[in-house]
Length: 513
Image (cartoon, rainbow, N blue to C red):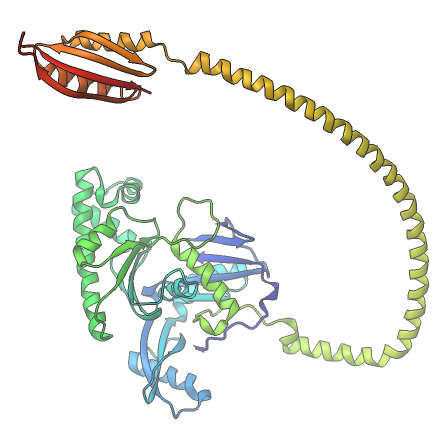
C-alpha cells in the first residue's frame, strides 16, 4: 500500500483537542484548552485529533533517486517499485510506504522512503482503533524531532544528534540544518539496559529499585555497584553510538557533529550528558526542552510533547508531515458518495416544492413572530421595572457597606501594627544571656579563658587566652560546626603568643543570626 503525504480527508475545523498515544506502553495524553494531561481511557470523539508514533525498529527507511523526466502522477508507483527492488521486500507481505522529497539540485529527484509492514501496524494500532475509530496521524519517531526546528525551539544551523531511550527501543537520529538525515536503532532500550544490568550482577535485581536509581542518581549513583555497572553499560552504548556517528559522517560527508541531545522515557539520566561529552568529545545536553505547554507532571515523555507539536504542524499543513496511518477518519458526509446522493436527491425535491411552500410558510411565520414579540415585550417591561427597584436598593446598601469597610480597615490597620510590634518584642528578641551561656560552656570545654568581653547588638567580641593555640582553633571549629544555625559569622583575626607569660591570645568575633 502506498500513501502520499496528504492523508487526511476531513476538515480540521471541528477538532478541539489533540490525543497523543504511546502504543508500546499504553500511555495516553490529551491536549485540551491549554492543558496537557494524562488520559485514563480512550473514547471516540470527533473533536479529538488522534496521533501516535512508530518506533524506529518497526520501520525501514532509505533514500532513492528518480529521474526528473518521470511525470508526477507516476511517482508514487515508481517509488513503490523501487522500495520492493532496492530493499528486497517480501512480495507476499503488505507494506505501507510513505515518502517525502528532499532538496536536490542534481538531474534526479531525491526521496526519503519510510516502509512499515501492515501486520505490524495492525498489531500495534487495531486495539486503539477499536476505541477511537480512527488514527489521524502515525509518525515515524525520528521525524518527530523536526517539530523542534519548525517551532524554532532549536536553530536549524549545524548538525545535531539525538539519542533517545524508550521502553522497547533506543535510536540515534541525525538532522542537518533542520532536515532529517539518518536514524538507526540500537540494542539498548530501557528494558534491555535493565536486563544487561541483571546479567552483569548475575542475579535478578529488583526492577523498581533499578529504575528508581537510574532516574534519580544515574551515573552518579552513590551505590558503587550501580555506578560501576551503569558506567560499563553506557560505555558499550557510546561505543555503538560512536560507530554510527563515524558511518553517518562518512555517508553524508559531514565535517562533524555540532551538538548531541540525550533523553529517555524515564526522564534525563543524571551525569549522562557529561559522560557523553567526555567519551565522544561532543557538546551534549539533556533532551528536555521548554515546549510552552502546561503540564502538572514532574516529567512527561518528550515524544508525547513532540506528538502535540507535530499534530499542530500537520493540521496547519498536511504536506509538511509524513503520515503512515492506515486508519484515517472517514471523509466528511458531503464528500462521501452516499452523502452526495442524498444531498442531490433532497435538493431536487426541495427545489420543486420551494415556491408554494415559501409563501405559505412566510405568512405563518410573520403572524407567529408578531404574537411572540408582543407577549415578550409585555414580560420584559414588567421584569425591567422590578430590577430597577432592586438595583436602587443594592446601590444604597453598597454605599453603606463601603463606609463601614473603610472604618474597619482603619481599625484593623492600627491593631495589626500593634500586634506586629508585640510579636517582634516577644518572639524575635533573643536573650543575650542565652548566647553568653552557650559561649561560656564551650570555653570551659576547651580550657580557654576570657580576659575581656564586648558586645553590640547581635555581635560579641571575646579576648581569648589559652595555653595552646590549637585549643583556640578547635574551639572556633567546634562552635562553627555545632551552632551554624544560630551563628551568622565567626572569625578570629589573629592568634599570637604573649611573650610575657607564653600564653596564646586571640580576638574572637561572633555575629549571631
